Amino acid sequence: MEEEYHGFGIATPRTISQFMYKIYAWMFAGLFISGITAYTIAISKTTLVRNPIILVGLVIAQLALVISLSAFLMRLSYPVALGMYLLYSFLMGLTLSFIFIAYTSGSIVTTFFITAGMFGAMALYGYFTKTDLTKLGNILLMMLIGMILSIVVNMFIKSTLFDLLISVVGVVIFTLLTAYDSQKLKEMGQRFSGTPVVREKLAILGALMLYLDFLNLFLLLLRLFGRQRD
Image (cartoon, rainbow, N blue to C red; front, side, top):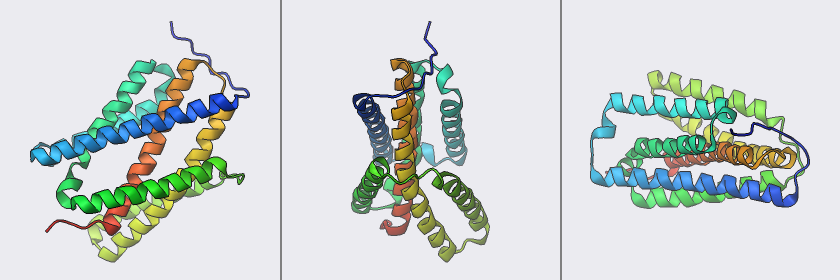
């Protein structure tokens, strides 16, 4: 029977570094799965994921996986939690296949490296800074909610200028979220001294958090600077 001990205490530097390594390893694994899946679907020229009903189904499935992982992580076994994360990455890849159709390959690659640079810089800042970023959490949450509402409103008014403003604000939000989440995960690693199984599951949750930060930052930058196909 799986142990459910959630102990907190003082972790060693080695434990913290191992915890963060696993987070980034799974994050990059998720991005790799999404990227390969999206590219494969795009070059296959399948029309399956262009069906609105299927797209809505994919979005609902992705939301269900994220909510389930976040809410029930400690009740799930490690293989199930990992499988859900990898499945989410695959489903997101199916959804993202449109970017290889809408944007040129050169602009996608360029935007990816720009995103990687910005993400890496902010992740390092969040990890090493002595500034407490806790207060940013509520502010960024409110900004994120405002951004989502603005996207919904713009679906009706269809303002190009408003869409540009939303994208710029979104870049700011997810850039700051990267630093905030990086510091939050480091503090989690510092305080946590539970069982190896629980640490492994928390690393999956951390990977999902940073995966979403990276992916949203990439998509927003692509909207701003990506070159669309003719």
